[in-house]
Image (cartoon, rainbow, N blue to C red; front, side, top):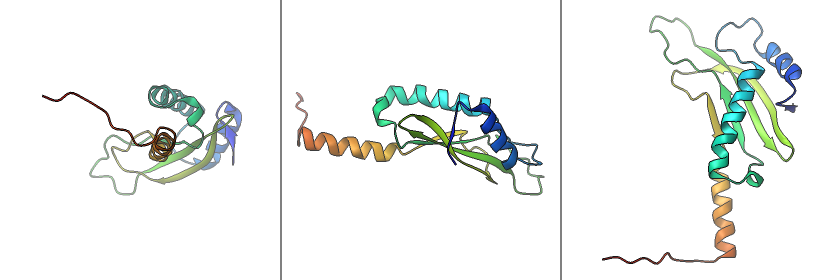
Length: 135
């Protein structure tokens, strides 16, 4: 599956299938669009846009607190949004177990990008040491 995050009709249709008969911790196109917007704002501070390709977002609505009297396993909808060269695309939607306190949006792949940038810098600049004056 590959659905552009700007195609609200397809997103809502896909989520309707994943969330059939569900009433709690469900997602909609607005929530996903806002999650992408907030993630882009965070990513712009730490990584140039040309390096976003391959990153993915795990988007869900997780409960803040689950009552101890709750008899059952809380479920939530999880959506994976992946950055391709032409934009953000939903690549997977699932309904799975959740825990309280889970993040609503998790950016995945930053460690890989950090390693790639580190390897690039060591190849182009070589080994270098920062000089400083220490008293």
